[in-house]
Each structure stands twice: as C-alpha cells, then as structure tokens.
Image (cartoon, rainbow, N blue to C red; front, side, top):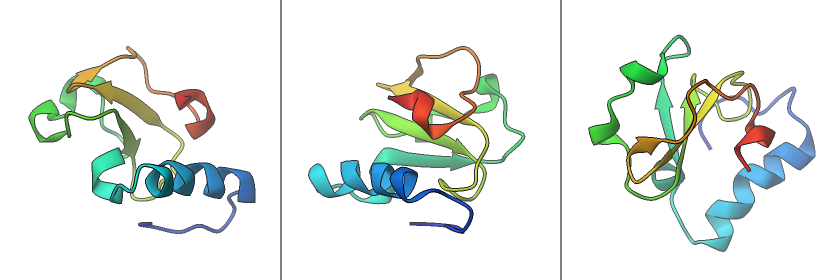
Length: 88
C-alpha cells in the first residue's frame, strides 16, 4: 500500500487490505489517489476504474482525512467522506 501506515489503527489497516486480498485485486483497482485538496467536481472520472473505487484525497489510504466513493465512474456521494470507515 502506498504511503505511511503510522498513526493508523490495526483495524483500519486490515479493512484496507481485506478487500484487496479477498477480491485478488491490485491497489490501483480499488483506490484512486487525488490531491488532498481535490473537490468532487475536479476528479477526472475518466481515469477512475469502472469497478467500485475509493477515491483517496491524499497520498496515503492510512493517513488521508478525506475520501470519495465512485461506482461505474460516478461519484455516489456529494461531499467527501471524513474517514475510510464511512465508505462501507
């Protein structure tokens, strides 16, 4: 996984790794990284995978404070999610 893992609970680390392992997917297929200041309307959805994708606002899934969720290259939430736990 890209980025720092320090300061993140073991539960969150396991939740991030579990879907990758279970679905035998690569990180690039489930997580799409954008700048930490990126707004929903600025996400280049043409570059996002068609599969359900967690858009990480920042360099690390573990330390980011904002996330978005995409299904079939459509954002399914209008505001960024404050925590990975809200993506489920």
